Length: 153
Image 1: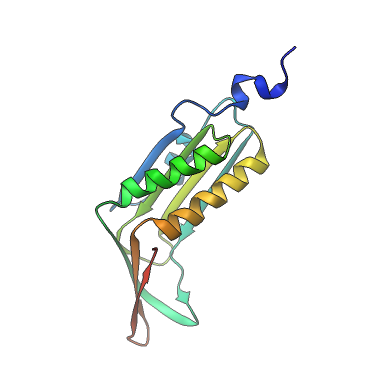
Image 2: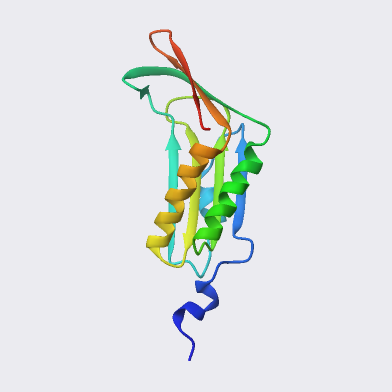
């Protein structure tokens, strides 16, 4: 008799990287959520990063993201690394570039896995690695007139 881990739904899906994008247009949580839907997934973890009105104790007036031309390829590399380490059924990651306002979505990532603990862990790894390894830079302008570049890598 087969164990539950032998069930096809317990194994990594074929090509689980469903959506990878760097966009100048508004992001959609619904699009990312739909991209990771999978009948064999018991858990979907989704992270949404938004533009906040402060950073480091200073009020943020404006924010823009820019990226290296390789950003999407690097995001795919990060996604494939997560897929290799976790039992991912489906994965999606999108990041915004251009000028954003407070409250805008800057990044949306999601992962579906057979179980919730795996989904949480894989999603955490995905967003952490996107922030640290994908060449996307944030330019912030503060209310006191100062500005700052923050690099993802």
